[in-house]
Image 1 (cartoon, protein in one colour):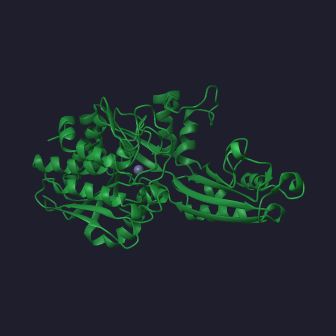
Image 2 (image 1 turned 135 degrees about the vertical axis):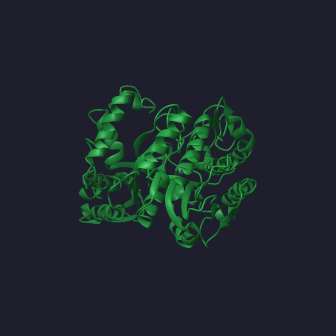
Image 3 (image 1 turned 45 degrees about the vertical axis):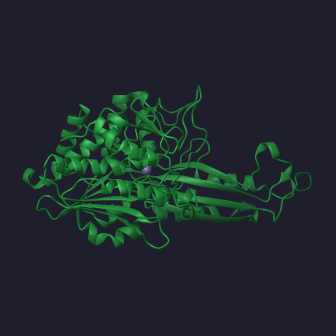
Length: 467
Ligand SMILES: [Zn+2]
C-alpha cells in the first residue's frame, strides 16, 4: 500500500502545520531554549501524533539526558524474524527565521500555496517524523513484513548535533544490531527522482578576535600609531584563503577527490549544465567561481571553502563614528571535504591564526568542528531497491549527488557502525530554502520520498533472498 497526498493531508498535515507554529529553535540560536520550552512543546506534539499510529507492536518514548535536548525514539517491532534494525533519522529543531520573508509568508504561520507548504522547519526537518512513521505504517497496512525499525528524531542537529553522541551511547542497546540507516535530512537537485546523497562536507567553525586597544580611541589621535585590528585580521585571513581566487591555502583542509566523485560531477554537469546554478539569486553579471559546471560541483562538494558568517566589534554604518576600534571579531565557517579530519583541520586553522601575530596584537580563537561523510559501497540489493522505488514513485531512476552541507549524525554513525548501509535522502530541493527565508516543503515530493522509504524498508526485509 502506498501513501497518497489526500491521506497525508488528512493524517499528517494538521499536526505538521501546528509544529510549524512552534519556535523550536536549535539551542545554538536560543540559549534560553530550556526556559522557553518550545523544543519540549514540539517534541510532545510529535510524540502525541506518533502514539496515534497503528502498528502491531510499538513504543513511543521521549528520552531526556540531563542538560541536553530531548530525543524522540519510536520503536516499531519487526513483523518478521530478522534480528537486524533499521534506523530512520530526522530532527525537529529549527534554524532561526534569518530575515524578512516574502509578502504573505512568515516563519511561524504556515501557508499552503498549491502543493507547497511554507514555514520554518517544515522541510528541514519537520516532515521527517511524519514521513518515517507513515512509511512504516503503510507497510503494516499492506501486510508487508519489515524488520525492527527505530525512528530517531533529535533536537540539536542545527547546532551541529552536540547531544547526539550521548544519546547514541544510551540508546545503543535499544538500537540493537543496526544494518541500515535512513537519513531524512538531505537534499535533492530536482523533484523528478529520488536523490541519494553520496557524500557530505564537514565543517570547521572558528571565531577569531583581534584586539589592539583596551578601549576605543578617537581615530584622529590613535590612527597611524595604533595598528588597526581589521588590518591585522586581513593579514591573518590571507594565511587561510587566497583573496583573489577563494582557494583555501591550508593543506590540512584539502583531501584527495576520488575518481568516482569526479565522474559523478561530470555526469550531473552534463545533464543539467549551467541550469544547475539558476536557483541562486546572484546579482546581474556576477562571475561564478570555477572554470565550468563540473569544477563548481567539485568546489561545492569536495573542496574546502570559507564563508565569513558573522562579525563583531563593528557598529552599523549609521552610528559609526571616527573611532579606532579596540577589536574586530570574525566568525569563519569552513566547509571541509568529506574525507578530511575536521578536528585536525580546526587545530591547523587555530594554529595559523594565533602564531606570529602581526604587530603583537592579542588574538583569541574559539571553534568547533564536525566531520564530513562519504558513502560506503552500496550493496546490490539496496541499489536495486533505490532504482525500483524511484521508478515507481517518481517515474524515473534515482541519482547520486554529493552535498555541500554537513550532517554530523552521519559521520557519527559511520564511525560507530562501520558496516552499515546508508540511505541519505530528503526533500530539500530547488526553492526549499532550508536555512533561508521562505522555507518550503513540496508535498508531492514528501509523499514520493515517504513511499520510497517504505519500499526500501520492505526490500531490506528481503535483502537475503536477493543475494
Ligand atoms: Zn536539517
